[in-house]
Image 1 (tube, rainbow, N blue to C red):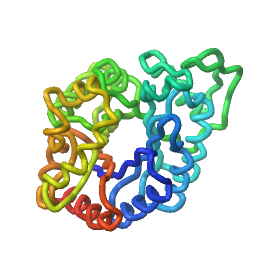
Image 2: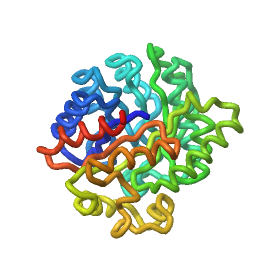
Image 3: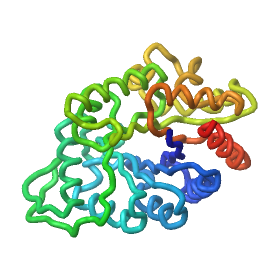
Length: 301
């Protein structure tokens, strides 16, 4: 199972670069950078990470039709692929409805996601494109094909989007806040959809984003993690962790524990069928090295 770090895009870029550097030193597999409307973009930090940390694969998370014309996204991904051939991946979706709505986005259309992924992939391949795709216009557009087109994943929570990911994408990205039961059920759903579409499971990556904190005790780690769940609506939490309340059950919705329990916690994700965990760390700066070393050791245990 792969283990990477993930950045929300809310903190200063310099802080994320420091953690990515330490993650490479600890032997982790990659770094994911998320973008949210009104905060940092993901492309600039990803370019810096690709250039500075050759030991890490780098992914961008959260690019959406409201903020990226597929042609522009393909141009950006092609440039990133030149910086790090074979090391780039992108997770596409519709974005947080509360944020994308501020610039005219609508986060409720499977068809838009389908067109967004297909148009981006065709642009990356250097195919000519005309007409309207994902609410964007193409008029005889064509770009030079990328030497190593990045994999395109779909961000999904609900069943229909998960099934769409299994049909058209190279992988699926599952949200932070998910319980082990949700993850196991979701992996089974995705695997059934892959089989239905005649697609091999071993070429499809299932990534679980997760909040992470290592502390002296599980109680201390949970206390640090719990406030992060306030970014979610009750409706989304009800989908990701049915019957659980982050105020009392955060340990079941994140990786928050003492170092001695970390291997067992990671193994729960492995048993659920997850291929990669992307950890959004809640650590003090002086704890980063020890926490990342603990994660790497637990992955390899």
